[in-house]
Amino acid sequence: MRILVLGGTVFLGRAVARQALAAGHDVTCAARGTSGDPVDGAMFVTVDRDDPDGLRAVEGTFDAVVDVARRPSHVRHMVTALAGRVGHCTFVSSCSAYADAATPDQTVDTAPTLPPADPGDEDPSASAESYGRCKVTCEQLVREGFADTFVNRAGLIVGPEDPTGRFDYWVARHARGGEILAPGDPDERLQFVDVRDLADWIVRAAEEGLTGTYDGIGAPMTRREFHAGFGGTGSLTWVTQDFLTAHAVEPWSGPRSLPLWLPLPEYGGFLTRNITRSLAAGLRTRALPETAADTLAAFGDTRHITGITEEEEVELLREWHAQ
Ligand SMILES: NC(=O)c1ccc[n+]([C@@H]2O[C@H](COP(=O)([O-])OP(=O)(O)OC[C@H]3O[C@@H](n4cnc5c(N)ncnc54)[C@H](OP(=O)(O)O)[C@@H]3O)[C@@H](O)[C@H]2O)c1
Image 1 (cartoon, protein in one colour):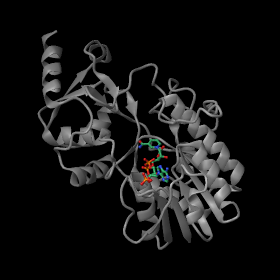
Image 2 (cartoon, rainbow, N blue to C red; image 1 turned 45 degrees about the vertical axis):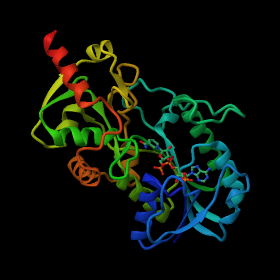
Image 3 (cartoon, rainbow, N blue to C red; image 1 turned 90 degrees about the vertical axis):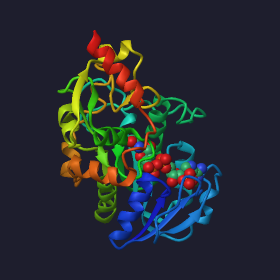
């Protein structure tokens, strides 16, 4: 197949291109080239999608296109530029498109989405809600523009080449061992998907002509299972949400945060999606120890992009034990 990856210079786009090449396809990636390089073996076309005519440089027809865009204008221009030249279309959306982050175990069939972005208010970086609303608009544009669309609402994507540092905070932390501050309750759940598993599903979806809307995320596991998946010699000290909040520890990512930790009950549904429909439609996920080992091999145990520092962890544990 001739597959066009709009993006392909970073993380998921690169993984899709790599997977498509490995499956024997002819792959073209189109981006500015500012975020990184395309994988070896892919043809690269330099485009700037901020320009309404920016995709003019992409010539010919494609059996499938994969788009990771966040801006509705990018998708609007893409639909116009590729009309009649593309067969199957995968749009990588996000679970941030959902309106209700609190209710656990929601399914793709029944969970309501946010309203679309207001016209002229299409900056996905303005807030988490703007990002979600922009994705909703992008989804609508893709469905209107192409007959065969696979909308893949990705959840937390992890693994080698992840630029965010959220998952590899835990990879590095477990590799270091010692007393590890584990946030929340061991029975709380979370979920994620290895970037290679998501890319594999996206490529097979194009090959098989899969259509419809699905969540691109692995099955929920408990935080106890999550930490056990890293192996290592460290010992966990579970620290409650109330303590963390009282000590100005941030959720999810960023300075003084505990990556992948989210406050409850307001985020009780964000990392507990029911993926029965995705599994039935072909999603296959590898076990956490493999993702953890490969991420450790890719980044080592010293990379620290986000999360509390070693000194902050020591101090927080000291205060936890002192109370
Ligand atoms: N990471 C997560 O945990 C997570 C969770 C849920 C959903 N998602 C979704 O999953 C996808 C991740 O995609 P990704 O890993 O490939 O990362 P990304 O950061 O979304 O990649 C954006 C791609 O688009 C290109 N691009 C950006 N602006 C452009 C422009 N003006 N013109 C042309 N190309 C442009 C970038 O390349 P250049 O900068 O080189 O142009 C890059 O290749 C996204 O759709 C994201 O919303 C991610």
